[in-house]
Image: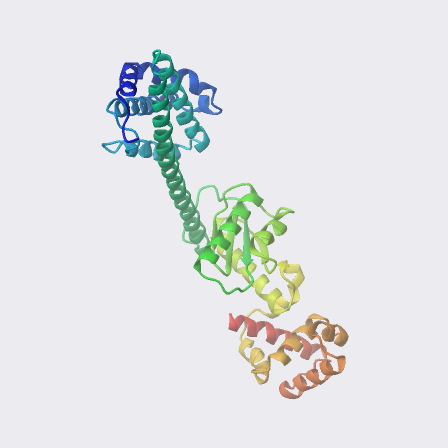
Length: 389
């Protein structure tokens, strides 16, 4: 059916004079029963939503009176409702409340058509019911799409503002109000992975969502596919559930370290300390997870650059191209020079570990059995990892 019957057109025309009355009834009586409607600003309820209801009623009745059924409303009729949906999204009106006003409004209109129908107009009423359902479907689809588009744009803008704030604070180029007290600076390092841009964006979104959940607020963060930093003003330690929630979002290979800046000006230094803690823990072979300065205190000290750093790092140059020997040295030092523990971790026989250690001594001249040379080897590993990064 491409057009309405004369009887249906006549019924719609008889209801059009009631448009203002029906719109007021919707916004001042029917919508009041919708959850959250009473909390809307008065001007939104009594002016803007009333105008939208009046526009929708008049558009449907005039279109029906003209005999149209499924053809989209002329003169950009849907565009008006899309613009209102953008506005409601920008104001923060919940989508379910917005859509409820449309469905409730359609019910009010249906009741008005039923009341106006005369005996013998049952078929005309059925035609208008079908037309109303079709029109409502088009409007709700357009409204939902526009609302979600606007919400996505708002979220993207807010996210970019947070990233810009985090970048400026980490670079020390901005002083932000409300950041005078302590700031928890969380450094995160994700496990290496081969992935495209879509996977990286999903990872970053998951981690950002997890950060917001852990701290109960929108956390300024600067993240990419390798990790990054998050800044939480007024906090000095991670919540108990933080590691588990963030690991669920980022994967089991997540490493993180939390440091405290006394104020915004100290954020860059605190961020660098966090990066170094994670780097040293990783270079020492520590398992992924949360890392603390006390866990790598000696190693952190040994990894600080100095006038002799280059010469110390060069002690292991003879092991270049021998990752098996480097891995054995790192594991052996991490296991406090326990050859059996080293063998178990590397999947070797203890005699094979002894052979590799002897080969390391032969190539480098370092006797790992002496405290001095063991400390030099550890410092060389740490300084070498710094240069590699």
